[in-house]
Length: 300
Image 1: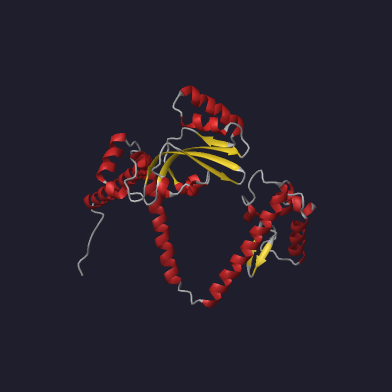
Image 2: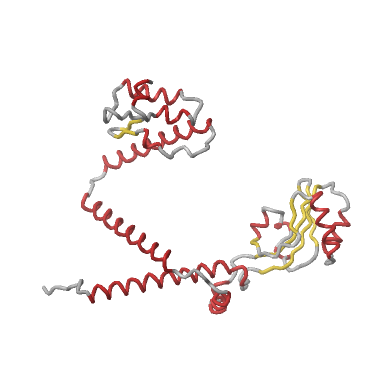
């Protein structure tokens, strides 16, 4: 341990504040120390696969900050195991494939070029893209592309109250639920805060039915009843009572509401702007290169 402390950074020291149980780490360190598995005299590997070594520096960032002590060792063990599996598969591939180094280098060069260009385009977009999309632009895009906004499945606006099966005054709750009187709505809200583990009385957002199914058993209402608006559906399930009112509905193959597509349209408009910005940049850069006589075509 004195030797390790003198070298400043050791795997044991790295894990001291992360894990209470250092038996595995100590064993790994001891094993490789005793076997003299070293790449350099001042580096102590913690794992080996064929001629590849894993060093403490390779574990930097593996264990997230504030990780529970009991979880830290498991994370490190999993990382080492995954690393060795990857090395085994890489060794197997390299041993059984005729490697075309020129092809690989070409692919690497092309990938590097793509990454550099992508980074440049992203920076261009960050600096120059106009990200303000007006309501009029969204509405105009929606009107001009209605065929692209046909629903693939039904969407609903719904209010619901989830109650225990033995909840009191359910008949009164149902009357309050369908009432439009503000005082009744206030009474209903107070009741729900007292007795309901989950409720939504005035949700005006559209939802797919599979989203609503996570909140209440919408499937038991049935699609044939989706047009029965502003009436109460009462469903009992697993000692729970659900009171549900469908406020609005749109069916498959019908036009999706503008408000439901708003974020999607905004992203489409921004993507079109981004593509146009990049295309204009390419055109301008190419023309500039021509103007400066940077491009030539030689006769053969």
